[in-house]
Image (cartoon, rainbow, N blue to C red; front, side, top):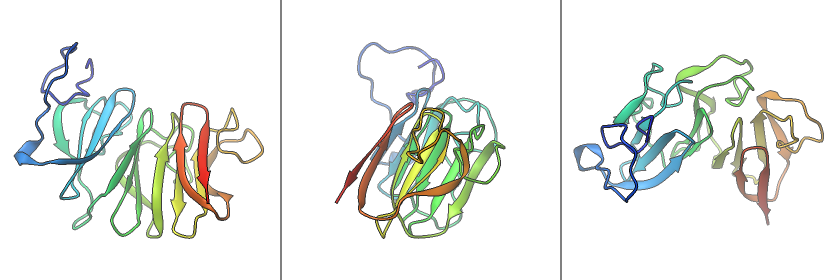
Length: 193
């Protein structure tokens, strides 16, 4: 809890389970953890974040660590049913299938066509996304047609493109048949139909 990633309002390490109360009585629907930051999607579709923010991965418009839950400013009226945390980046799926990204981007893991960090959520896909995953320095999304797209670090071949070249824009990895994707530090797994 050295970066406040438990959302307890402090940076004290915990050796037993502690309740972490969300603001305004919000109830958690989904949770995702990076190494030092945490994101929660509430039942209302709000995105709450805490922990390390060195790359802007909390999406708060700054790089200040947060040891208590903060609402990440999604665009007006946008609700988030899912979130994935990489090492220093965050990927958000909206209810209309849009893909938002923020945080560190040194390997192009945000898919924006450059390597500049982003401290607020940026939309890279306006619709059609149904699943997301974030690895250490790479990210993936599955579209409604079952196609798999990836971006970011690829030095170990973790994007599955047949080479070891990083990608700063999302590239088509598999054209169809992907049901689910999961990403680790330097590897990725998919479930196909």
